[in-house]
Structure formats: C-alpha cells, structure tokens
Amino acid sequence: MININEVLETNKMVEQQNLDVRTITMGINLLGCADKDLVMCCQKIYSKITSLAKDLVKTGEDISREYGIPIVNKRVSITPISLVGASCCKTSDDYVMIAETLDRAAKEIGVNFLGGYSAIVSKGMTRSDELLIRSIPKAMAVTERICSSVNVGSTKTGINMDAVRLMGEIIKDTADATKDNDSLGCGKLVVLCNAPDDNPFMAGAFHGVSEADAIINVGVSGPGVVNSVLKSIRGESFEVLCETIKKTAFKITRVGQLVAQEASRRLGIPFGIIDLSLAPTPAVGDSVADILCECGLECAGAPGTTAALALLNDQVKKGGVMASSYVGGLSGAFIPVSEDQGMINAVEKGCLTLEKLEAMTCVCSVGLDMIAIPGDTPATTISGIIADEAAIGMVNQKTTAVRIIPVVGKTVGDTVEFGGLLGYAPVMPVNRWSCADFVNRKGRIPAPIHSFKN
Image 1 (cartoon, helix red, strand yellow):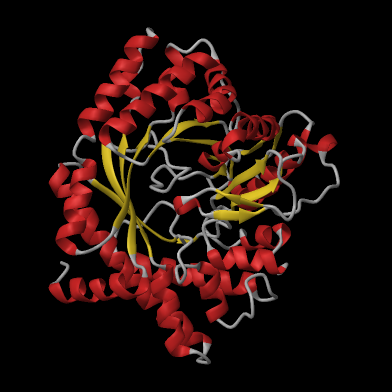
Image 2 (spheres, rainbow, N blue to C red):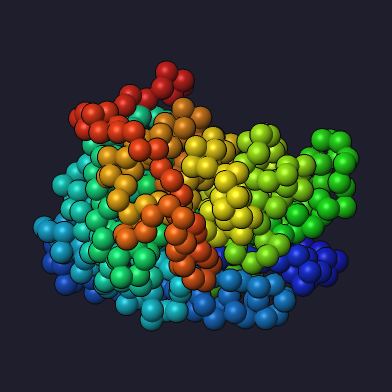
C-alpha cells in the first residue's frame, strides 16, 4: 500500500525537482472494429475510442488535482492499424481516411496524442502493411494528434531490409509533406526494432495483440529528481552513486503506481504497466544530459558518457522493479536531443555527435530520438542509420528506435523550433559517405545466432 508519507515526499519532488507523471495512456483493442466496409470500420473505430476513453482526460485531471502530482499528458494507444484496416483498405488513401477518423476521435476525447497508426513488419510486409506505410506522409500532414510507428526488426526475426529501405523514403516524403511546419510530421513517426506491446510513450506507442481489450499504462519521468539528489553526493564512490539512483528511482516509480491504481479504479479498466523512463523536457533542470554531467562528465558526449549512461539506465530499472510488480514499456533513460536542454547544449558545443549518440543507444532505453538533420540527406543514408540502430537492438535483445527529422530547407548550423515538449534542435551533421548499394539489397538480415533459445 502507498501511505501518506510517500505522498508528502512526492509533493516535495514535484514542487522542487520537476517530477511529473508524463502520461496516462489507455490502450484500446480495435480488432473488433474490422469491417469490409471502410465507412463502417471508421464508425466502429470512432465509437469505441470515444466511448471507452471519454473520461480519460477528466480522470487524469482529477487525480492530478487531488494528489498534487502533475500529469502532463493523457493519451491513447490502439491496435496497429494495418491489422484493423486490412479487410477494407484497398489504397493508401483509404488508410488516410482512418487516420482522419482517429484524429477526430483524439480531439473529441481531448488527448494530446493517439498512437498506433502502425505496422509490425519485422519479417515481412503484407499488402495492408505496405499500403499503411505508404500512407504515412499524407496521414501525418492532414492530422494533428496521430503518431505513427513501424517495427522493422526483432531479435527473433532479424531485420526486414526491404522495410528499412522503404522507411528511409517515407521519412523523406513525410518531411516534404510537412515542410511548411519545419517537417514536424517526422517528429510523430518512429522506426523501431523489438517494439514492446505496452509502451505508453509516443511516438512509438501501440496496443499489442497480446494485451487485454483495454488497459491503463502509466509513464513516469523524473530526471530532475535524480539530478537534484546526485548533487548531494558529489565525489562519492560508484557504490554510493548507484544506490542513490536506485533508491530515487524506487520513489519515482511509486508515484506512477499510485496514479495507475487510481486511474484504473476510477475508469474501471485494468492496470497494465508502469514505465519508469527518465524522459527529459526542454525545462532547465529536467535533463538526462545534466545527470550524466553530475556523474562526473564535463559535458554529455565526453569520454565516459556511454559508461555513465549504462550505469544510470541499469540503476533506474533496478529501483523501478522493486517499486512495482508490473514495470514494462521501455523503462530507463531517454536521450531525445530536441527535448533535452543539456543535450542541445552539448551538440552546440560540438561535444555530442550523431556517432556518439549511436554509441549511447547501445545502453539507453530507446535510440536516436528527435534529431534534426539536413533536409538534403539522401533517403538511403536515413535507411542506413535505421539499419544501424535496428542492428544494435537485434543483437543486444533490446528496443531501439530512430525518430529523425530531415528538415526541408535547413542545413548544419540552423536551429529548428518544434515547440512544447518537443523543444528545439540544432541541425546535426550526417556522415556523407554513401550506403546506397548496401540498403538497396533486397531481403532481410537474419536473426543472430543467440536468438535460437528453444
């Protein structure tokens, strides 16, 4: 049980250290909405989302007000739409019609994002998968609150390089389709390897087919809390450092447990998982990069950065699993460039490069996240970056992702303003040597030998 002392301690972390519940995400199974008639399918989708999630935003606001805990976002994740639309979508424009329906539903219930405009193609693409993927640029251009994800690989299946090649082109097309808004459509699109079924964070959230009909997942974020606590133990041993992070992560996760239990009870929907992820914001003092510096680095990106991030990620997970029996999603440290003021500063100083970020993704919880690159970057180069990240995830049996934004009309040295939680980003240089002959090979990269565990 959670007692009043924990609540009081939580309020202190909220008031002084930027602690928040980043999201309450309701997962909704839409498989029952499949229909041969597109219009009927859209009607069923709209009806199910608006009926099940009609009280989600109000419930989150009520809990936030009663407990004094900021709940920043209320979101919905849905069954990958390529599965739901397979029976009625004959063209990419048919899928765009579903996207517009989802956007209307999201606006009706008041959530800021709805995730699950997705396809799972780690081993191969169905016709429906390909139609959805090719619809993404237009869907991102005509909607405001829809997030899209495509899973192109896994440890069990290898990497679908046909999908990787296609996603390089889709990202470029999405950038062009939303160029009047600094190619922001790419900020709502992520390419994954080993995507989890229960991730509450956008843009990669979807409601996996292994989940219940509806579920409540909560994502908690507290980099400011961790950073504040570490200031009090400067110069202490690694043992003290690890124990301090672990204990702090425990306390943060208990906040998520409290909110999840209350939301589940009030909405009458089962609790799924707590995702404890140190997800930063552009706010000063709410930065994962600052935590790494507090560990002893002069600047994020300096030698030792990957080791410090590995330590941080591991201790966060260890503390989280002691606080809740159902820790899931991604859980760990996020390193989105545009959403982390410390990361932005490190890039502007020249200390943090794309290659160093890639090395860091070997030990963090996600991957290359919210990175702005020159708009003239070739699609094949973007595919190569995706392939590299997918390989890291596949071999290391972890989730990796690429959310990269080739900003049309921008080049290295420019800055792009995205606004809100998405922040702003300096345009980073990309290796200009070609990988076109590699990514244009057809087929897939086989699963690693250690994937055979039966």
